[in-house]
Image (cartoon, rainbow, N blue to C red; front, side, top):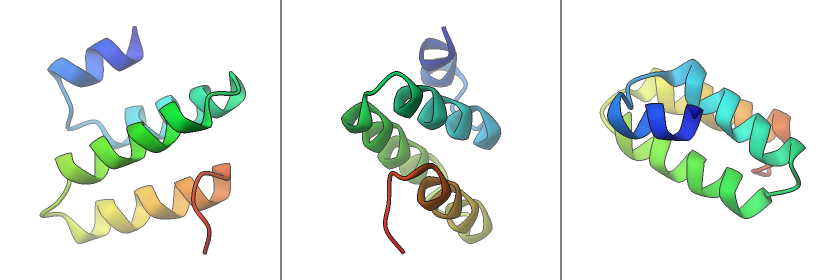
Length: 65
């Protein structure tokens, strides 16, 4: 449901982090990376949001420092 909600209302930074975390918990790292890519595209003009999303991805284990 969260993924579907983010498709219709994508400007939810916390929601994207939750989705990435959920995908990793479910053992779906590729889906988590896809969520990160989509989130970064949504927030392309917001440097602060991109920084926070990337930091969360590193913490979750999606991205490397």
